Length: 152
Image 1: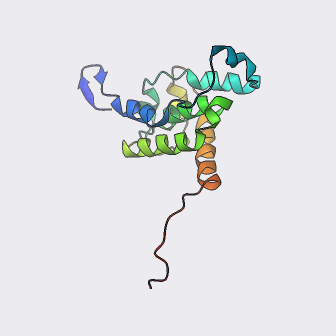
Image 2: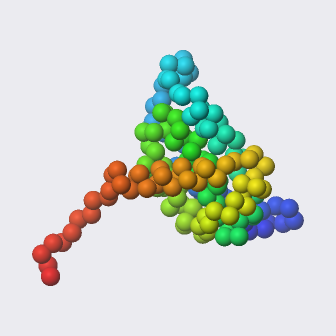
C-alpha cells in the first residue's frame, strides 16, 4: 500500500475491490424473512468467519507476492456461502477478482503467510472457495462473443 505518512497507508485499493462487488444488490426480503430462509449451520459459521475480515491489509503486507487474495476471498466467501448471495455469485467473484488484478495485487502461491498474520484468523480455505467460485462462473455462464465468421 502507498504510505501517506508515518503509520498511515492508502487502502483505497481495498475500497475499489469492495465497490466492484462486495455487496448484495438484489431484494433478499425484510428482517422478518431472515428467519424463514434455512441456512445450514456450517455455512452460517463459515460465512461469519469470513465476514470477520476487517480489511486491515496485514495479509497483503505478509505476502511475498503482495497478494490480496485472502481479503478478496473472505469478502467473496461471506456471500457465496449464503442463499442470499448466490444470486449474484458469478458476477461478484468475476468483478472483484478483475478489480484486484486491476489494482496490481499479486497472485497467491499458497505459502500461508497471510493466514498466519491475519489478526482475525481468516482461513486460506476461503481462497480455495473463491477459486472454485471463479471457475464455476466461467464454466456455468461462458461469455458469448460475436464473430465475423467467414471473412478469411
